[in-house]
Length: 61
Image (cartoon, rainbow, N blue to C red):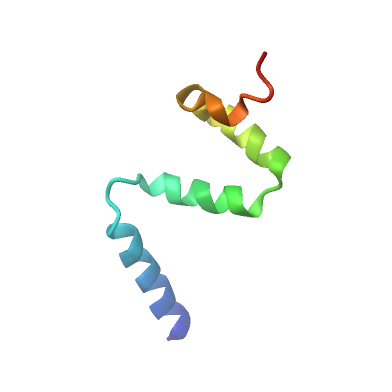
C-alpha cells in the first residue's frame, strides 16, 4: 500500500507540472543518477547543447 501511494503521489506531482513533457522527468532522473561524463554524452545525444550552448561552452572553442 505504501509503495502504491508513493507511486500515485509521484504521478500527481508530474501532472501538476504540465509544461514539462513526461519524458523530461525521466531524463532528469537519468541525469541525477549518471556520472558527469554520462550527462555530457546524454545532453549531446539529445541535442540539448544546441538549445543551451552555455552548458558545454567550456568544450567549444
